Length: 452
Image (cartoon, rainbow, N blue to C red; front, top):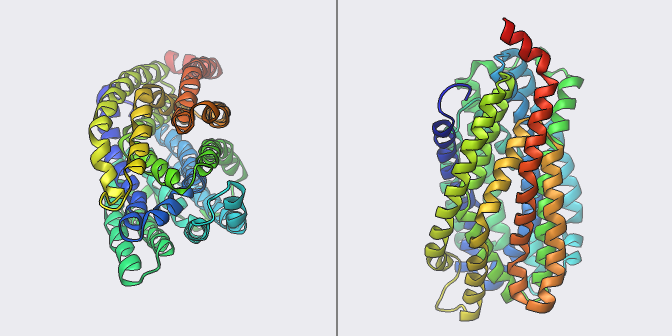
């Protein structure tokens, strides 16, 4: 990432990640698709009603491990291989501790949280049986994301895709087994998800161990290093909380949706799943710019960092326009994956399409959020992603509780776009402020390198 065309590097790195993200979305969507097709609309609504909570925990894991990989990316860019290995081991220690804490806290709060957001009575038991298993198995997701983030941090964006493809196929097979052969319903698809994620994590670890000698751990590496752990948590926790804050916004919107009944819950679930599936290039680009920024910060090449963000902005805007057009075309056929049109009322399908046809006009600010928020995290900032996430939360909360009063379900459809606009507006200014501060911070080192 420290040499060559920024456009080519970002695209060549992001495109495999994009396909990996597609698989990961399909991986999570299989649960919704299978229960919707083989169990019924209420089961689909039950899984959909947990979307915000699932996003909160899994997003926390993604943000935390992405933050952990920043230090590995920076040390790799600086060619400090002992530092890379040390960061790797300390990341494993922090991840194991986080898994235990998250599983305990959310396992206890599972049903109370569903009651808090007014989950409809006819689906709350199925919703709890599904999300409780996801909570208890959060360690599998956390370690898969950790090992994938580490591979991307050293420039390997393809291998995680292969592991995810294997586990995605396994997830489908296990889902069908636990729903049709062993009829466990919502619980069955949750069990399948945890098992498949665990296998993916194990495969990733084996590959890292065999492919990259710098990650081969020595006995003394297991000694906790206060300085390294402090840095990992300083970058990882804000990254984790930014996902969680966004998830709280999603949950708040879910509260508003729950007030419209289980049919609206099912419609919104389908619409948001379609949106999530078709917009996976944006987080892929974000991961690409994060790795690019981290490695070039390690090399103290600020001119190249600026060039990369300019290239990323062009790619983000172009990708957003193409994604909007593609989503418009594919939305109706994709809805058929989740709903059996022979038995589903036209109103449910219509509300799902209304959501999709509303949000596609706002994909440019959404793409900018991923570019600048994740890119700033790659530059070592934990505060900027947090500021952006809090902005999203505030705007989404206000919109979710005010717009439906005047516009009903249509108001719900605009809650996320309003949040994207506000967060997407402030992030470029935050990035420019950050890059100037970093240049001032490293001015002496840059002068020394120039003189040398």
